Image (cartoon, rainbow over all chains, first blue to last red; front, side, top):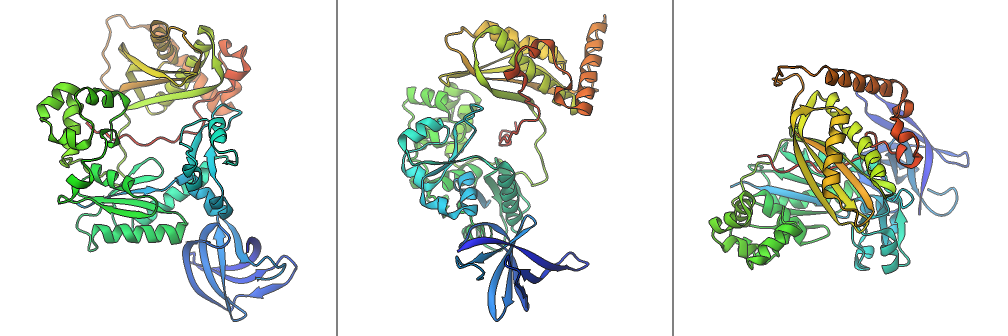
Length: 83
Length: 410
């Protein structure tokens, strides 16, 4: 596993609440976030790093998306293009 | 009875580095200052480096001799401050009485909370682990001193509870040097009286302690018996400034009086500027000297009138230096500080014959301060510093400093 920084489309509401909508993978593919399940501050035990952790449902799987000081990353498998 | 927690982030700097690079947990690693700028000492180390016998404060080359595979990381202070702030946000969910002691330690007063002290301690540890990826050691007790001793007893990621019932078994066998404010000098004086453990201090007559060590002796006796009543300061309560000081480890050893004068002038300028910024002036000038073998001493002198003038501070520091330093060895670092502070616009003693020269020196130094604020620190320099690029490049005012806040409040 490694920390893969990604481009993210987010929605910010009038109270400042942030909701990620779409994750862009480096090879050009993108995945829509079907549902936001949980938001909390957390450290990634798998790939290191710390920030606000968004637990997202993407294609029926739970994916952790982290926001660390303005940059976003996912815990990526060491196979290219796999979340 | 109060419930006081002392929470200590284990190996703080090193642990934060491990959060971002988890593979560093599996190798001996130390966060060290920059050896090029001669700040090359170990600031923090991880568990494996600790197991290899590496100690905080030793030189990088010594550490590498003990442990050739040591991975050395430069410090990232911005990140440490961010983690420290996030930890305080977690503490604030339980109490507003939070007193910091450096970046990595805090006292919390949780008296009257619906959860018990040990419950809060365990929850803090879980949250630090999950939310920040860090481990905490927490001491739970009925005063600040025992809480701090408790957080040192079990590491990492542990809660230690010290109660009025068990403190004699847990605290009294500890060496006296573990007590806050017992440094090498106090320890020697205690040893002369055969006081080796905290229990020895607790069991002796308070009058004897006072005779041996003055007011501090009595304070240690109070600490050792769990009678300390010092409150935990509230989060937004900052202690009034008691002194303003600066010290620096120079890029090369200070070899003669001219070098020393240059560095003292730099430090005095910085101290004077900070005093004036806060509208303060001080009456006592202190000088700290550390030679290349890391032996150090401090001396101080009271001035006739309070000052915020770099030239006067430096003059006094230089006098102290000439009187007390014998040039046995070259010097590694120097420090200047000014204490016994008062407000510059306060009730200053009027003199019969006002010193107009002094007023003009104030105007001059204020003008220099203005130029520096507008055009940068190096826009204007003292002539004595121009010849020496190495020392001239030191900017003590803006160099990064993190200090634990003072403890004694009278």
